[in-house]
Image: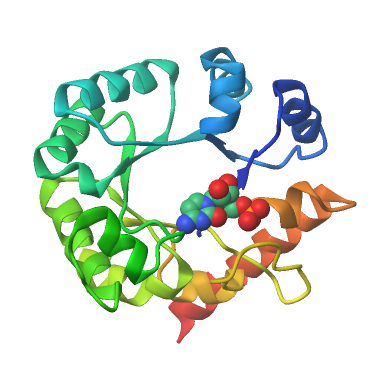
Length: 235
Ligand code: C5P
């Protein structure tokens, strides 16, 4: 069964906590750099204390010693999963994986979906086109460094699942059901297609958080994701 992670892109802790009151069945939440910078680690502690699994998406990219310290801090907070940039390099990812131990699942970001080939070349001095080959290369380095998995867009699922094999975690944002607005997401997939493609965790924000009935929207995503798992194993 794929997990559905609700992206809490709220402006304040009280907004996030009010929203969670309306989502009693949610098990996983994503806390990103906006909420973390505004509200700090106390909010993460409160989420953990109420039994939530926290995906801390701070996309660390620093020297190995510093990233290892941040991972240990997240582990002490009770965070369940966190992100590093695979472009931080092999030693940084190894340090993150070692600091995580069995306490946190560390997943790697490959090529930010905000990049196109030109902006990626300008940032890195490399000209991989299409960027798919770069996603493959970075996913391989994450696997070899011992990370638990990768964050990727729905369009990269095939490549990433092939590189990582069957048991790795694949976390996919940009999830939209047929009836949902796309918002600013371009590369989207329906929950059932993402799960059928190998996603283990679906990150869903506005289709749930901005819905008139967030609990019903959450249930809808969970049911569609669950149906896809059943289909995958029955075929
Ligand atoms: O509201 P929506 O479902 O688009 O939110 C998706 C979440 O996943 C947001 O928190 C967004 O920052 C994050 N995300 C993304 N695309 C990526 C990486 C992260 O949408 N490539």
